[in-house]
Length: 80
Image (tube, rainbow, N blue to C red; front, side):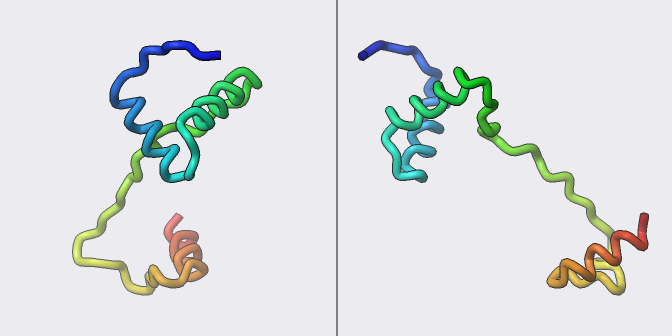
């Protein structure tokens, strides 16, 4: 069935970009979103929350290696 829906310009532009990124038609993207909402599942947020950056004067603290996740966890656990 065809219908007309008014969508804010910014939302339509974001939807078209998302559809293109996922190699979908806009129709399929909209159908999926409607089905998720009707099924009661929440869709992922359009924009992720902001990252809280932590800075330290003078560069990285001693013993902190950003390339080594295990070492970072170890360093962080010592700080808390």
